[in-house]
Amino acid sequence: MTVDIDMGVSRSGGPANLDLEELLATRLLVQGNSGSGKSHLLRRLLEKSAPWVQQCIIDPEGDFVTLADRFDHVVVEADRSESELTKIAGRMRQHRVSAVLSLEGLEADAQMRAAAAFMGGLFDAERDHWYPMLVVVDEAQLFAPAAAGEVSDEARKVSLGAMTNLMCRGRKRGLAGVIATQRLAKLAKNVAAEASNFLMGRTFLDIDMARAGDLLGMDKRATEMFRDLERGHFVALGPALSRRPLPIVIGPVETSARSTSPKLMPLPEARGEDAADLLFTASADEPVRAPAPRRSHAPQPRPEAEILAQLSAAARTEEAPSLFPDYDVAERDAQIDQVLAEILDDSEAAFRSVAVLYQDFLVRCRIRRVPGTPPDLAEFKRRFAVARAGVSQEVAGTDGWQTAQSLAATLSEDVRGVFLVLARAALEGEACPSDAALARAYGSHSTGRARRLVTYFEERDLIVLREDFSGRRIIAFPELGCETAPGDPNRHDDGPARAAAE
Image (cartoon, rainbow, N blue to C red; front, top):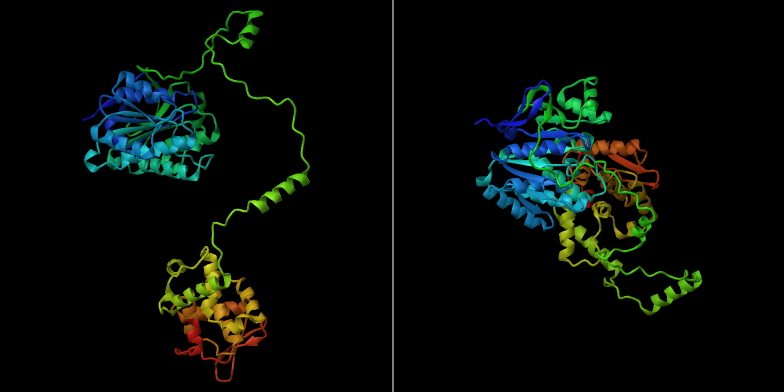
């Protein structure tokens, strides 16, 4: 069944109809500066389509609550909990009742959360209740802003997600989004881009005219017409409106908004000296408020030394008990080292991602009741690289090992462990680790990647690579003043080097 909604007349005098069935299968975007007639257009659309389709209006200013006086809309005040708004939206779809969500009086952050909760209830309704519905969002730039503003990131995220669901995935659930905005530049592009029908009103800024022209397929010169549009005049385009840009004039409406445009009014007749009495004399019905206490004189400033002395005395006499029990730092570090050793005992630990290893580390710390705040991810990477190197207590306390750690800090986190394995072998005078051992320390099975890492260290002037007469590899560390013993890079059983890498 085709239902044409009479939106007004075209500039040529013909009817300007909107195919309601086509609109339900697509979406509509209305744009126009303040005073261009957007709210009048939405009211015309809602009044003409009310007998044919269920409606939901997200109303930030409470202008559309007057629809309840003429039609069967239910006004839902948004001063409720988010879960309650979600349930009301679900019942609205179940019983096919049209409603107006009035957000008047709420702060911007609360408006975004309430609208997101209500649209979430519409979107998450059971499949049996996916009846066709027009979801009209006035001032859509408030709920899908193109950039972060003064609201919290969490509120912006949930509101933008709800608007994106409405415009991108709402059609399959019977939700046809109709959004209106004062400025396209302030509206998130992924929300505006999903609309297939457009009604563009008066706008003056070049960036908004350019975006409107892009959506309508008009060149830059043609977009100048948007500056000349009168109130209630729009350019229509889309499968539900017109296949070519069509200037139309919106027709009259039956209901009116509670807020109207300001109009000039004559001032009251001159009252002469009586005007002063009106300002300075309270009327009989005016509520009386107690005046705020006023100090007769400013307090004398106190010397800074006296204030500091008083604060110090209070701190000594009323020392608050600590919320966290004291613990031995050395004992805690020993427990952490033991947890790292347990992880390294697992033969598959070398090939797991750092994120997986870190989660395993946190679980083991909780099991062992390690006191204090657990190390963060960066600290865990540093400790794990040192533990993977397998350095002994004697070497760990030397200046050479401290220098090796300083050199490793100049490298990216993923290769520090390999460098420390080589440095430990040099400081302890062991054979140079094989390519297989270095690959395992890197978390890979590729020996070619291990050879490239050794070349990379040499290019950074951190090591000097050479071979003895038997072709065995020796790695020298100029900054440490030591080198590894000769070692076969191709061997698979590395003895101490392999055990250290594990």
